Length: 388
Image (cartoon, rainbow, N blue to C red; front, top):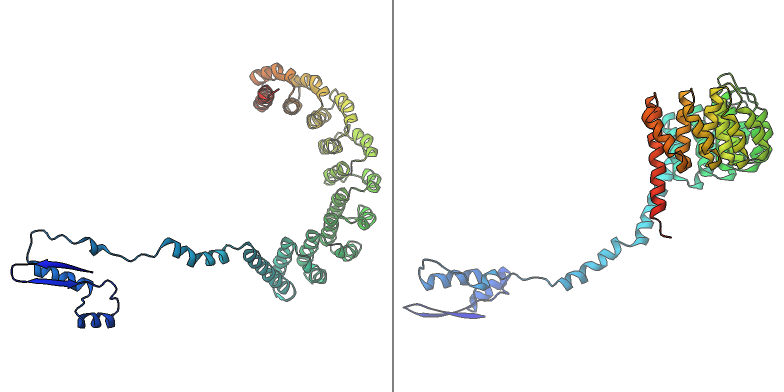
Protein backbone atom coordinates (compact mmCIF):
# COMPACT_ATOMS: atom_id res chain seq x y z
CA UNK A 1 0.00 0.00 0.00
CA UNK A 2 1.17 3.61 -0.45
CA UNK A 3 0.12 7.05 0.51
CA UNK A 4 1.19 10.53 -0.65
CA UNK A 5 2.79 13.21 1.49
CA UNK A 6 3.39 16.74 0.17
CA UNK A 7 5.34 19.72 1.49
CA UNK A 8 6.48 22.95 0.00
CA UNK A 9 9.67 21.54 -1.46
CA UNK A 10 8.85 18.20 -2.87
CA UNK A 11 6.38 15.50 -3.34
CA UNK A 12 7.20 11.99 -2.17
CA UNK A 13 5.57 8.65 -2.67
CA UNK A 14 6.32 6.26 0.15
CA UNK A 15 5.27 2.64 -0.02
CA UNK A 16 4.77 0.77 3.25
CA UNK A 17 4.95 -3.02 3.21
CA UNK A 18 3.35 -4.65 6.30
CA UNK A 19 4.70 -8.02 5.41
CA UNK A 20 8.40 -7.14 5.72
CA UNK A 21 8.94 -9.00 9.00
CA UNK A 22 12.49 -10.38 8.92
CA UNK A 23 15.73 -8.42 8.69
CA UNK A 24 16.62 -10.16 5.43
CA UNK A 25 13.37 -9.11 3.81
CA UNK A 26 13.77 -5.64 5.29
CA UNK A 27 17.07 -5.19 3.52
CA UNK A 28 15.58 -6.43 0.28
CA UNK A 29 12.68 -4.06 0.70
CA UNK A 30 15.04 -1.10 1.23
CA UNK A 31 16.94 -2.00 -1.89
CA UNK A 32 13.76 -1.99 -3.96
CA UNK A 33 12.50 1.25 -2.47
CA UNK A 34 10.13 -0.44 -0.01
CA UNK A 35 10.58 0.62 3.58
CA UNK A 36 9.58 -1.11 6.76
CA UNK A 37 6.49 0.21 8.40
CA UNK A 38 7.99 2.10 11.38
CA UNK A 39 10.80 3.63 9.30
CA UNK A 40 8.33 4.79 6.67
CA UNK A 41 6.29 6.43 9.38
CA UNK A 42 9.30 8.35 10.68
CA UNK A 43 10.18 9.55 7.19
CA UNK A 44 6.62 10.55 6.52
CA UNK A 45 6.48 12.54 9.74
CA UNK A 46 9.75 14.41 9.09
CA UNK A 47 8.77 15.17 5.49
CA UNK A 48 5.47 16.64 6.55
CA UNK A 49 7.23 19.14 8.81
CA UNK A 50 6.61 20.07 12.47
CA UNK A 51 3.01 20.18 13.69
CA UNK A 52 1.56 21.12 17.07
CA UNK A 53 -0.32 17.84 17.23
CA UNK A 54 0.68 14.90 15.13
CA UNK A 55 -2.10 12.43 14.43
CA UNK A 56 -1.01 8.86 13.88
CA UNK A 57 -2.75 7.30 10.92
CA UNK A 58 -5.17 4.51 11.68
CA UNK A 59 -2.93 1.88 10.17
CA UNK A 60 -0.36 2.41 12.98
CA UNK A 61 -2.50 0.14 15.19
CA UNK A 62 -2.29 -2.71 12.72
CA UNK A 63 -1.86 -6.04 14.52
CA UNK A 64 -2.15 -9.28 12.63
CA UNK A 65 -4.69 -11.53 14.43
CA UNK A 66 -5.30 -15.22 14.14
CA UNK A 67 -8.91 -16.07 13.43
CA UNK A 68 -10.81 -17.68 16.36
CA UNK A 69 -11.82 -20.46 14.02
CA UNK A 70 -8.20 -21.28 13.25
CA UNK A 71 -7.31 -21.20 16.95
CA UNK A 72 -10.12 -23.63 17.70
CA UNK A 73 -9.05 -25.96 14.88
CA UNK A 74 -5.53 -26.01 16.28
CA UNK A 75 -6.44 -26.42 19.97
CA UNK A 76 -9.52 -28.65 19.84
CA UNK A 77 -7.54 -31.88 19.31
CA UNK A 78 -5.47 -31.01 22.39
CA UNK A 79 -8.63 -30.39 24.45
CA UNK A 80 -10.07 -33.68 23.22
CA UNK A 81 -6.99 -35.53 24.43
CA UNK A 82 -6.81 -33.80 27.82
CA UNK A 83 -10.55 -34.01 28.55
CA UNK A 84 -11.05 -37.54 27.25
CA UNK A 85 -12.86 -39.69 29.90
CA UNK A 86 -11.07 -42.78 28.69
CA UNK A 87 -7.68 -41.15 29.12
CA UNK A 88 -8.65 -39.85 32.58
CA UNK A 89 -9.86 -43.28 33.64
CA UNK A 90 -6.69 -44.91 32.35
CA UNK A 91 -4.56 -42.41 34.24
CA UNK A 92 -6.55 -43.01 37.46
CA UNK A 93 -6.12 -46.76 36.99
CA UNK A 94 -2.38 -46.35 36.54
CA UNK A 95 -2.16 -44.31 39.73
CA UNK A 96 -4.21 -46.88 41.67
CA UNK A 97 -2.03 -49.75 40.40
CA UNK A 98 1.08 -47.81 41.33
CA UNK A 99 -0.23 -47.24 44.88
CA UNK A 100 -1.26 -50.90 45.13
CA UNK A 101 2.19 -52.14 44.08
CA UNK A 102 3.93 -49.74 46.45
CA UNK A 103 1.73 -50.80 49.39
CA UNK A 104 2.29 -54.52 48.70
CA UNK A 105 6.03 -53.91 48.53
CA UNK A 106 6.03 -51.96 51.80
CA UNK A 107 3.95 -54.66 53.52
CA UNK A 108 6.52 -57.30 52.62
CA UNK A 109 9.77 -55.32 52.83
CA UNK A 110 9.42 -52.27 55.10
CA UNK A 111 11.70 -52.47 58.11
CA UNK A 112 9.47 -50.40 60.40
CA UNK A 113 6.33 -52.05 61.81
CA UNK A 114 4.45 -48.73 61.54
CA UNK A 115 5.15 -48.67 57.79
CA UNK A 116 3.80 -52.19 57.39
CA UNK A 117 0.70 -51.26 59.40
CA UNK A 118 0.07 -48.27 57.16
CA UNK A 119 0.60 -50.42 54.06
CA UNK A 120 -1.99 -52.95 55.29
CA UNK A 121 -4.48 -50.15 56.04
CA UNK A 122 -3.95 -48.66 52.57
CA UNK A 123 -4.54 -52.03 50.91
CA UNK A 124 -7.82 -52.34 52.79
CA UNK A 125 -8.84 -48.83 51.71
CA UNK A 126 -7.98 -49.48 48.06
CA UNK A 127 -10.29 -52.53 48.06
CA UNK A 128 -8.37 -54.34 45.32
CA UNK A 129 -8.57 -58.10 45.76
CA UNK A 130 -5.19 -58.55 44.11
CA UNK A 131 -3.88 -57.69 47.56
CA UNK A 132 -5.56 -60.71 49.19
CA UNK A 133 -2.67 -63.16 48.86
CA UNK A 134 0.01 -60.70 50.05
CA UNK A 135 -2.20 -59.86 53.04
CA UNK A 136 -2.79 -63.54 53.87
CA UNK A 137 0.99 -64.04 53.81
CA UNK A 138 1.37 -61.05 56.16
CA UNK A 139 -0.84 -62.71 58.80
CA UNK A 140 2.41 -64.33 59.96
CA UNK A 141 4.15 -60.97 60.47
CA UNK A 142 6.17 -60.99 63.72
CA UNK A 143 4.53 -57.76 64.94
CA UNK A 144 1.05 -58.17 66.56
CA UNK A 145 -0.01 -54.69 65.45
CA UNK A 146 0.72 -55.56 61.82
CA UNK A 147 -1.21 -58.83 62.20
CA UNK A 148 -4.30 -56.98 63.48
CA UNK A 149 -4.12 -54.42 60.67
CA UNK A 150 -3.75 -57.20 58.10
CA UNK A 151 -6.79 -59.10 59.46
CA UNK A 152 -8.96 -55.98 59.31
CA UNK A 153 -7.75 -55.20 55.78
CA UNK A 154 -8.76 -58.71 54.68
CA UNK A 155 -12.20 -58.03 56.13
CA UNK A 156 -12.46 -54.79 54.13
CA UNK A 157 -11.63 -56.64 50.91
CA UNK A 158 -14.58 -59.04 51.48
CA UNK A 159 -12.69 -61.79 49.66
CA UNK A 160 -13.88 -65.28 50.66
CA UNK A 161 -10.44 -66.64 49.92
CA UNK A 162 -9.41 -65.13 53.27
CA UNK A 163 -12.06 -67.00 55.32
CA UNK A 164 -9.93 -70.12 55.90
CA UNK A 165 -6.80 -68.26 57.10
CA UNK A 166 -8.90 -65.98 59.34
CA UNK A 167 -10.70 -68.96 60.89
CA UNK A 168 -7.33 -70.51 61.61
CA UNK A 169 -6.27 -67.35 63.44
CA UNK A 170 -9.58 -67.19 65.36
CA UNK A 171 -9.22 -70.78 66.59
CA UNK A 172 -5.53 -70.52 67.38
CA UNK A 173 -3.82 -69.44 70.58
CA UNK A 174 -2.76 -66.16 69.05
CA UNK A 175 -2.76 -62.83 70.86
CA UNK A 176 -6.33 -61.79 71.97
CA UNK A 177 -6.33 -58.64 69.88
CA UNK A 178 -5.49 -60.72 66.83
CA UNK A 179 -8.33 -63.18 67.52
CA UNK A 180 -10.76 -60.29 67.99
CA UNK A 181 -9.64 -58.68 64.71
CA UNK A 182 -10.07 -61.99 62.89
CA UNK A 183 -13.60 -62.36 64.30
CA UNK A 184 -14.53 -58.83 63.25
CA UNK A 185 -13.09 -59.39 59.75
CA UNK A 186 -15.14 -62.58 59.36
CA UNK A 187 -18.24 -60.56 60.15
CA UNK A 188 -17.35 -58.13 57.36
CA UNK A 189 -16.88 -60.95 54.83
CA UNK A 190 -20.21 -62.56 55.88
CA UNK A 191 -19.43 -66.13 54.93
CA UNK A 192 -21.65 -68.78 56.58
CA UNK A 193 -18.66 -71.03 57.23
CA UNK A 194 -17.75 -68.67 60.06
CA UNK A 195 -21.00 -69.06 62.05
CA UNK A 196 -20.10 -72.10 64.17
CA UNK A 197 -16.49 -70.98 64.92
CA UNK A 198 -17.81 -67.55 65.94
CA UNK A 199 -20.40 -69.15 68.24
CA UNK A 200 -17.57 -71.07 69.90
CA UNK A 201 -15.65 -67.80 70.28
CA UNK A 202 -18.48 -66.42 72.40
CA UNK A 203 -16.92 -68.53 75.18
CA UNK A 204 -13.47 -66.98 74.74
CA UNK A 205 -11.90 -65.91 78.06
CA UNK A 206 -11.16 -62.45 76.65
CA UNK A 207 -14.08 -59.97 76.61
CA UNK A 208 -12.75 -58.23 73.49
CA UNK A 209 -12.93 -61.50 71.52
CA UNK A 210 -16.48 -62.20 72.77
CA UNK A 211 -17.58 -58.69 71.78
CA UNK A 212 -16.09 -58.99 68.28
CA UNK A 213 -17.65 -62.43 67.85
CA UNK A 214 -21.10 -61.15 68.88
CA UNK A 215 -20.83 -58.22 66.44
CA UNK A 216 -19.76 -60.59 63.65
CA UNK A 217 -22.66 -62.96 64.34
CA UNK A 218 -25.07 -60.03 64.17
CA UNK A 219 -23.71 -59.06 60.75
CA UNK A 220 -24.04 -62.65 59.54
CA UNK A 221 -27.69 -62.68 60.65
CA UNK A 222 -27.83 -66.45 61.07
CA UNK A 223 -30.61 -67.65 63.45
CA UNK A 224 -28.31 -70.38 64.78
CA UNK A 225 -26.64 -67.66 66.85
CA UNK A 226 -29.79 -66.60 68.75
CA UNK A 227 -29.68 -69.16 71.56
CA UNK A 228 -25.91 -68.84 72.16
CA UNK A 229 -26.24 -65.07 72.30
CA UNK A 230 -29.17 -65.23 74.72
CA UNK A 231 -27.36 -67.69 76.99
CA UNK A 232 -24.20 -65.60 77.07
CA UNK A 233 -23.70 -64.31 80.63
CA UNK A 234 -23.15 -60.61 81.15
CA UNK A 235 -19.74 -59.66 82.45
CA UNK A 236 -19.48 -57.56 85.59
CA UNK A 237 -18.70 -54.40 83.64
CA UNK A 238 -21.59 -55.13 81.21
CA UNK A 239 -19.27 -54.58 78.24
CA UNK A 240 -20.94 -57.29 76.18
CA UNK A 241 -24.52 -56.07 76.76
CA UNK A 242 -24.70 -53.72 73.79
CA UNK A 243 -23.01 -56.05 71.25
CA UNK A 244 -25.33 -58.90 72.26
CA UNK A 245 -28.44 -56.73 72.04
CA UNK A 246 -27.44 -55.25 68.68
CA UNK A 247 -26.57 -58.70 67.30
CA UNK A 248 -29.95 -60.07 68.35
CA UNK A 249 -31.65 -57.07 66.80
CA UNK A 250 -29.80 -57.57 63.52
CA UNK A 251 -30.72 -61.26 63.36
CA UNK A 252 -34.40 -60.25 63.82
CA UNK A 253 -35.48 -63.57 65.25
CA UNK A 254 -38.85 -63.89 66.97
CA UNK A 255 -37.26 -66.30 69.44
CA UNK A 256 -35.30 -63.37 70.89
CA UNK A 257 -38.31 -61.16 71.64
CA UNK A 258 -39.50 -62.75 74.91
CA UNK A 259 -36.02 -63.04 76.50
CA UNK A 260 -35.37 -59.43 75.52
CA UNK A 261 -38.63 -58.27 77.05
CA UNK A 262 -37.63 -60.09 80.23
CA UNK A 263 -34.38 -58.16 80.08
CA UNK A 264 -36.28 -54.93 80.52
CA UNK A 265 -36.77 -55.89 84.18
CA UNK A 266 -33.02 -55.94 84.80
CA UNK A 267 -31.98 -53.42 87.44
CA UNK A 268 -28.88 -52.43 85.46
CA UNK A 269 -29.37 -49.38 83.23
CA UNK A 270 -27.01 -50.66 80.52
CA UNK A 271 -28.85 -53.95 80.20
CA UNK A 272 -32.26 -52.26 79.96
CA UNK A 273 -31.16 -49.68 77.44
CA UNK A 274 -29.45 -52.27 75.24
CA UNK A 275 -32.46 -54.56 75.47
CA UNK A 276 -34.63 -51.68 74.25
CA UNK A 277 -32.24 -51.11 71.34
CA UNK A 278 -32.46 -54.79 70.38
CA UNK A 279 -36.26 -54.72 70.47
CA UNK A 280 -36.28 -51.65 68.24
CA UNK A 281 -33.92 -53.30 65.74
CA UNK A 282 -36.14 -56.37 65.57
CA UNK A 283 -39.04 -54.01 64.90
CA UNK A 284 -41.90 -56.31 65.80
CA UNK A 285 -45.15 -54.47 66.63
CA UNK A 286 -46.01 -57.17 69.16
CA UNK A 287 -43.44 -55.55 71.43
CA UNK A 288 -45.51 -52.37 71.83
CA UNK A 289 -47.96 -53.63 74.47
CA UNK A 290 -45.26 -55.15 76.73
CA UNK A 291 -43.28 -51.91 76.48
CA UNK A 292 -46.38 -49.87 77.38
CA UNK A 293 -46.80 -52.05 80.45
CA UNK A 294 -43.12 -51.50 81.26
CA UNK A 295 -43.85 -47.76 81.53
CA UNK A 296 -45.72 -48.56 84.77
CA UNK A 297 -42.75 -50.33 86.37
CA UNK A 298 -41.58 -49.18 89.79
CA UNK A 299 -38.02 -49.26 88.49
CA UNK A 300 -37.15 -45.90 86.82
CA UNK A 301 -34.49 -47.60 84.67
CA UNK A 302 -37.14 -49.83 83.09
CA UNK A 303 -39.46 -46.84 82.51
CA UNK A 304 -36.65 -44.91 80.82
CA UNK A 305 -35.81 -47.80 78.48
CA UNK A 306 -39.46 -48.45 77.64
CA UNK A 307 -40.10 -44.79 76.79
CA UNK A 308 -36.98 -44.69 74.63
CA UNK A 309 -37.94 -47.86 72.72
CA UNK A 310 -41.57 -46.80 72.16
CA UNK A 311 -40.44 -43.61 70.46
CA UNK A 312 -38.28 -45.56 68.02
CA UNK A 313 -40.98 -48.16 67.25
CA UNK A 314 -43.22 -45.34 65.98
CA UNK A 315 -46.58 -46.80 67.00
CA UNK A 316 -49.35 -44.29 67.87
CA UNK A 317 -50.73 -46.68 70.50
CA UNK A 318 -47.93 -45.40 72.74
CA UNK A 319 -49.00 -41.73 72.56
CA UNK A 320 -51.35 -41.58 75.56
CA UNK A 321 -49.15 -43.72 77.86
CA UNK A 322 -46.14 -41.54 76.99
CA UNK A 323 -48.14 -38.35 77.71
CA UNK A 324 -48.77 -39.79 81.16
CA UNK A 325 -45.01 -40.16 81.71
CA UNK A 326 -44.43 -36.42 81.11
CA UNK A 327 -45.20 -35.98 84.83
CA UNK A 328 -42.97 -38.85 86.01
CA UNK A 329 -40.91 -38.17 89.11
CA UNK A 330 -37.73 -39.24 87.28
CA UNK A 331 -36.13 -36.58 85.07
CA UNK A 332 -34.79 -39.10 82.51
CA UNK A 333 -38.21 -40.72 82.14
CA UNK A 334 -39.83 -37.32 81.45
CA UNK A 335 -37.13 -36.42 78.94
CA UNK A 336 -37.34 -39.77 77.14
CA UNK A 337 -41.14 -39.51 77.02
CA UNK A 338 -40.99 -36.01 75.50
CA UNK A 339 -38.45 -37.07 72.89
CA UNK A 340 -40.52 -40.17 72.05
CA UNK A 341 -43.63 -38.05 71.51
CA UNK A 342 -41.64 -35.84 69.17
CA UNK A 343 -40.75 -38.90 67.08
CA UNK A 344 -44.37 -40.12 67.02
CA UNK A 345 -45.58 -36.70 65.75
CA UNK A 346 -49.08 -37.23 67.15
CA UNK A 347 -51.01 -33.93 67.49
CA UNK A 348 -52.65 -35.19 70.70
CA UNK A 349 -49.32 -34.45 72.41
CA UNK A 350 -49.19 -30.76 71.43
CA UNK A 351 -50.89 -29.24 74.49
CA UNK A 352 -49.22 -31.54 77.07
CA UNK A 353 -45.80 -30.79 75.54
CA UNK A 354 -46.53 -27.07 75.49
CA UNK A 355 -47.35 -27.22 79.19
CA UNK A 356 -44.15 -29.13 79.99
CA UNK A 357 -42.08 -26.71 77.88
CA UNK A 358 -43.25 -23.83 80.10
CA UNK A 359 -43.56 -25.38 83.53
CA UNK A 360 -41.22 -28.36 84.03
CA UNK A 361 -38.71 -27.73 86.80
CA UNK A 362 -35.81 -29.23 84.81
CA UNK A 363 -34.25 -27.21 81.97
CA UNK A 364 -33.30 -30.27 79.89
CA UNK A 365 -36.90 -31.54 79.98
CA UNK A 366 -38.21 -28.09 78.96
CA UNK A 367 -35.82 -27.99 76.02
CA UNK A 368 -36.71 -31.55 75.03
CA UNK A 369 -40.41 -30.71 75.11
CA UNK A 370 -39.87 -27.60 72.97
CA UNK A 371 -37.92 -29.62 70.37
CA UNK A 372 -40.62 -32.32 70.31
CA UNK A 373 -43.34 -29.68 69.93
CA UNK A 374 -41.52 -28.11 66.96
CA UNK A 375 -41.30 -31.51 65.24
CA UNK A 376 -45.03 -32.16 65.63
CA UNK A 377 -46.05 -28.68 64.44
CA UNK A 378 -43.64 -28.87 61.47
CA UNK A 379 -45.08 -32.25 60.48
CA UNK A 380 -48.63 -30.86 60.72
CA UNK A 381 -47.79 -27.84 58.56
CA UNK A 382 -46.15 -30.05 55.96
CA UNK A 383 -49.23 -32.28 55.86
CA UNK A 384 -51.53 -29.26 55.30
CA UNK A 385 -49.42 -27.97 52.43
CA UNK A 386 -49.50 -31.26 50.52
CA UNK A 387 -51.87 -31.18 47.50
CA UNK A 388 -54.96 -33.37 47.78
